[in-house]
Length: 114
Image 1 (cartoon, helix red, strand yellow):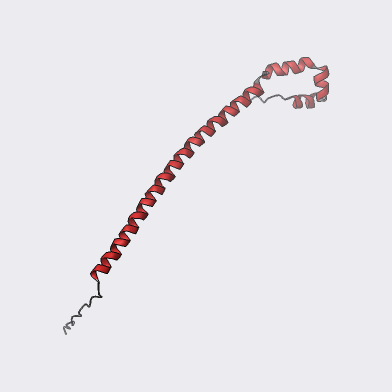
Image 2: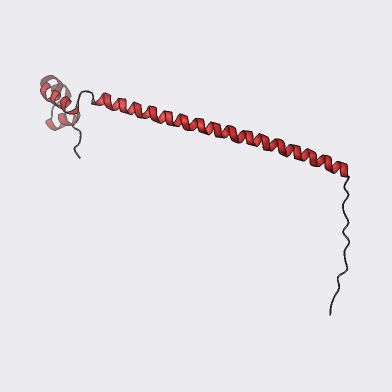
């Protein structure tokens, strides 16, 4: 895999400063830019920004689905809670109307076979 040639790496290999490269070796710099394309950094930035926009859109969609799911479960909880409270009230009313007393269960004598 070919590695990307950078200005810093080129200056290090040639043992010249970056200022020297820019001032005295403009044709080399132009060739380097032509090889990499003048818009490559902007293109990469644009692609990166587009990728982040797409990820954000996907995350917003997932968030909207999660919010809808939370709303659904909260509504179900409120409905179940109301039903349980109603059942408890009805059971309490029924108990008070029946005036229940503890039941006495007679004990049968056990027969022993010997």
